[in-house]
Image 1: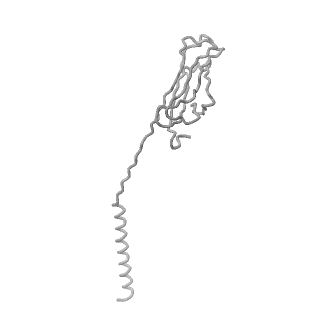
Image 2: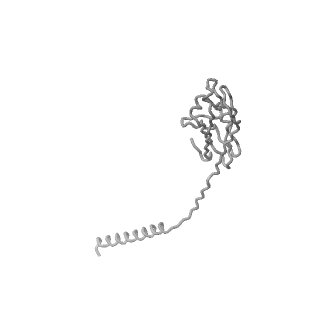
Image 3: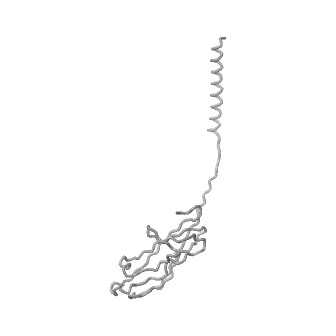
Length: 163
């Protein structure tokens, strides 16, 4: 045989051998099977709003009404807490004010008050406020009853929580 035919035969055999081993490797990769168990356990994140207040029938100018608001972590995980406090009647905001605890709570642009730390399971926040003050300038005929609506949210503090 001449030298050229031998080279062509060797190259053909090498290509066949390479193709065979390539097919075996790809087949083994596609057929291989691995099992993984991904366990997902959601956190137990629960809070309860605690309100201690005296119900007042007749509001008067200059009056101070005791109302303490805090949040208790009743879940199993540590959490961050934010609270929204709204007047039920927007006119009440003209003559009533609440004394926000700015040491432990921070009001942000979204209107929520954010508690300044992590709340461990079973713990309660410091009071968001303790009093509602009626202005001396309030006119008696405008002093209708109103409510301060408290809405609280919490998020799990583990794994970074929120920023």
